[in-house]
Length: 274
Image (cartoon, rainbow, N blue to C red; front, side, top):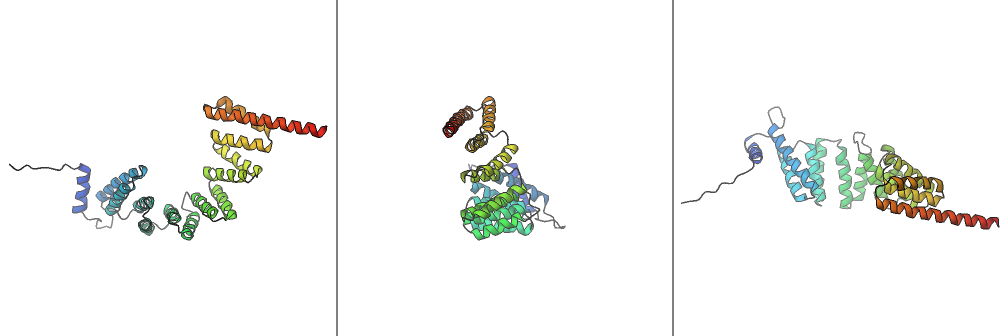
């Protein structure tokens, strides 16, 4: 007797497969078949989940299925391009991003993606051009990211003036831009320009007052500036309210540092008087 085996497939997969084989991609009015759109959205969700897992092969496979079902959605092409880029298939990523822009010429996220792509690819001149385009695009709601990326391009090229200019431009567009505020605070602190660094620490902590790690950095800066009164108030508040034992330990170390500096300064003043 001949044994027969049957392969059981998920209902959703059978539905999508039947759409591909039996129905036209577009209706007579030129619209994409709704079943194809649903299928594309299904594979797009699978692709996004795979990106979170950093399974780029799986992401590419699902995004590719998505654009096959609905090649008229620029977001699907963008997602495919990002998956290719993550997997270092730079030429294919370039192709996918180009397809996205052909469908949506003012797609700011893709302008930015092109900049990231060419940066990773080592084509820095092209990267600069695309980040500038993204930064100039009024319809791109996150164009401050393009100026931040430009700043790092210039930093790597040793163009300090352009680096600082673009970091500031990013903050002008988004005054609470966490990464840019911190980067400028650290830059001026490391250069010994404490007054300017303090300005950016204050702006950062005004926007993110519960960041205890940066509060400790700010207090350390105040001690270097000799602003012991403000530093003491902040240290007391941190020690009284923090639930993090490591933060409290670091705060006590700063208290000791502050008291030592105060004592040293008093000794110097006494010697001058004598």
